[in-house]
Length: 469
Image (tube, rainbow, N blue to C red; front, side):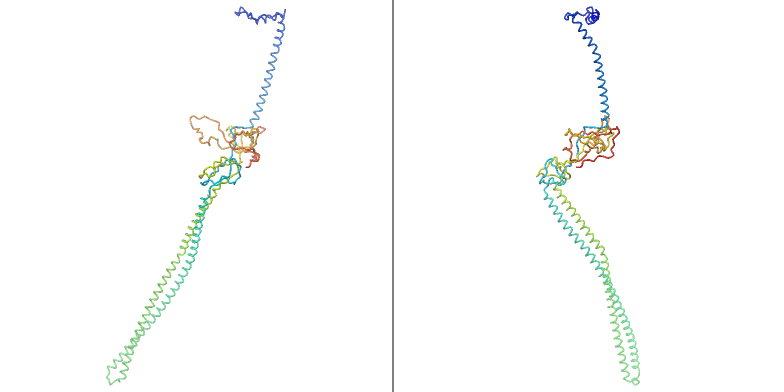
């Protein structure tokens, strides 16, 4: 009776009341007394197990939450040691090869994607025009050297002739001065002769006057007082004195003529001295003549230098017809074919060197603890299962947007702050021979370790060795 009384309330609670306005259910028969006992026992078991399962689920949930929290904390403590970006790519110093002279391409000696070494011949341009220019420049240089040699010889000749002319002029001046002195001595001798002749004339005149006076005196006497012989002797003496006077006058005139001739010779000698002195003055212009000759040598030397420069330029252009690889690497973007006419500066092909690195564009907020030398783990999309080691080489002094073609202009009214990215150069470690083939532009994911295991900022003393080409 107790079980029945306990079940009746449940049945009464589960049976809707007619008085409440609910229609009685006629499709479900009431449970039989025989089946009601097991059902009641099962409901009691379910009622007991429900809270227990909820307790177990709550404990499991709490345990999982704790595990997730611990895992999250551990992951955060581990992840904060690294900075990673997927905005990165393999980069390299691609070297474009251009033509330095214009002409027809005679041969191309490389193929697409061929591995070459520094100094290998890539292609050749028809050299005939440039060889002709070099030959012409060589001939011009030879002619300029010949003119220079002639000018140098002229300097030596002008110097030697000037010195000789000056010595001859000085000797001629001295010679003419000696002649003048000699002629002046002749003038003095002639003047002495004139003085002697004039003295003889005076003596002859005095003797003639005395003889004439004696003759007149004898003629004035009585012829009987003086003999005819005495008178004849006086007349002969007077005539002799007259003849001596005439002879003395002639000697004086001759001596005077000698004086005049001597003066003429002195004047002629003095004119020769003046001419010789003029020659000396002309010979003294030898330094100016030598300087003029040396200036001609300088002009000729300048012509030689100009011709040498033209020859060097022609030979240089001739050498440019053979285009060689400045570095080793792999040939890419070959845009030239034999028979093609190329212009100066036209890009013919490009060389991708073995010196490759990673350029990672990190957010500026990721650079707080990033320094050169920090270790980096590199993943390249081409080799998803491989991991490469490297180190931070350098950090660009400026964001990538600042050096773009159209840098942002923040001094505007519609400015919106955007996190900028800064290129970071990352070098591979070890020799390049160990790297698998890769090229610039391939996507990469670098992970930089910025904190040590102790949680302190990682600042390497020295950077690891970079790969060498």
